[in-house]
Length: 403
Image (cartoon, rainbow, N blue to C red; front, side):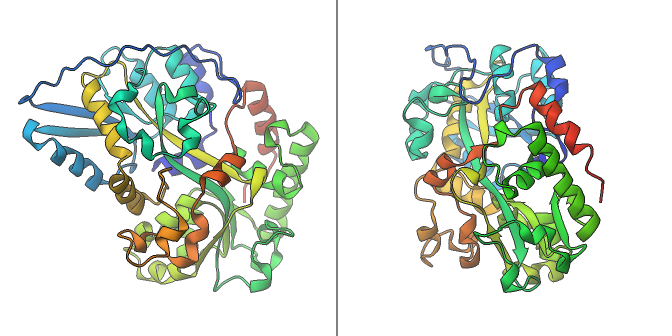
């Protein structure tokens, strides 16, 4: 199961983490984080020595070429990258707490970041060793940095994405494609019965129904609004056979199983990798389309990278994080996994130029998948839901019938 498949199944902020780390969860606007130490990592990687960098990642998260290019950049020192994967964030956090854990690089989610820092599992970053920070969007580097990690004291962003609707242009009538009037109507349209899907994730599914009803501040949704959203989803299940899936966007759409499906932008762009071994699915790729709302109604997400306190290679770990922010490296990874790194220079204009090295990574009909810094900044991230809020959402989600 990939990191994306896990997020579709799981609730962000898994309750089991509370048993692993007894720490309070920060709100999105005022994260409760300790002050980072100003002491940089000690150099324990002398010239001529061999070293192994241990990376703990979500399954299928990093392109092999990206790992290989990092090893080649330290060929004179015989550096090797050793990767281990996990499927569940609570599993990963428990592993990091083990005193015997010696991972150097980790990929946390925003929701668990306060707990990880409070438990002393992440090393404060030495920005002097991260020259490629200048390649990131200024949203992450100016005015105090991101709300979840002011000043990027412990993390750097890995990828960003938006949530919207994907569809097959050859299976959906032009009059039914998402638009400004009622953009999510396609998912309640009986003309496409049994060919419609939404992610099997309570935050994503209920958020979509809330947005369709006109609720834009998702964190402030009332019990009545959540109940109405759940009723709306239940109606779609009964009336049009709406299905909740893990892979409907990246696999079901190319295969023609779905005419339309709720989609993360990255899942639409990673679809070619999943369709490469299926000629029928590959033939459907040219018909993929994507739409996401503008402004506050846009749901966006951000994945992170961090350095572990117990790792034995802090200097090499900084070099690896810096490697991920190098523009060609970030673009190579993007071309493989479909999830956009927030680096300056990655934009629709670049992909409209056939001379751009990575031109084929984003076809012209999918340029709408690309996020601008401005669109990302205006959107909202589905994090910061405390136990009481999650309980309210889950209570309504559990009333939606399984399709």
